[in-house]
Length: 330
Image (tube, rainbow, N blue to C red; front, side, top):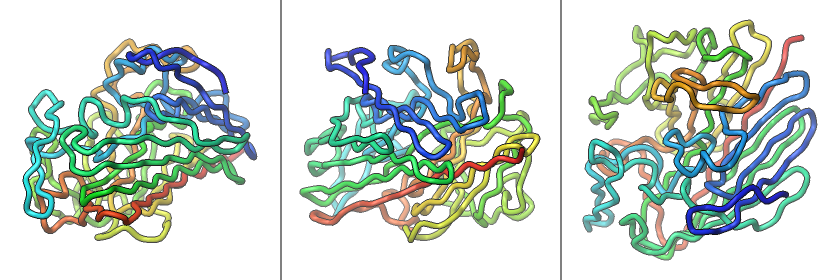
């Protein structure tokens, strides 16, 4: 573990290095961010990230961050919990609530609980009323490098009052050494997707993927002419860890298999990444430099009774887990 800088409040930020069987990772205590991820035999980082800490303080892309207490969008920042209305922080340019608000978990310093060569456990406390949410929430994130070139991300949370909770890991992946993800192939076990409006807010309509550009069941090549920022509906409730998706680089040399407990997979092809950002490996980032594959509950769930619930009762434990397993064809 090493010191890398300070957040805007003057809190020291540290980077924790993890190493396992053919895999290396670096995690920041700011935002519980996965800054770097590498596998043996491949020279480039598999995730987008800045080589230094300072750009993360103003990063609009949420590179590698742990997003909460509710990931994705909530229309007008309004939710109802047990019949009571709550006005959340409206931090998106169009007046909606995005990724837990302007001071969500991606914008705060987490505490190191414990760490070893193969894992790091971080936690954070969100007081009652933070970003408008009811209930004081205690959150823990654990990053582990496992055998067979696997990264595990596990998030748990408990609240002292009825609340809502929906975390997401927000890494952008690029499995090649090319500047964009064009030609990557995505396969995902989802037969439905959520239609959204011009602001990315779900309309409430759950549609069949058949004969649409959202049908990834047999594998679909990513093109820069197709822009995604949508939720693929994997299931109607959280379940035991299950393989749900595979991303392969253009020449099929590296594959990433995703298993998760979550009901949805948000896919965002990074079309909003600004041109000219300086990334890892002295790489210049821009639109489509990476694809964010974010296991989570369905977005704006509190405002759609037909969506899987993200309500967390007092005293119960929220628990999600996702694994990213890498393989190579030599």
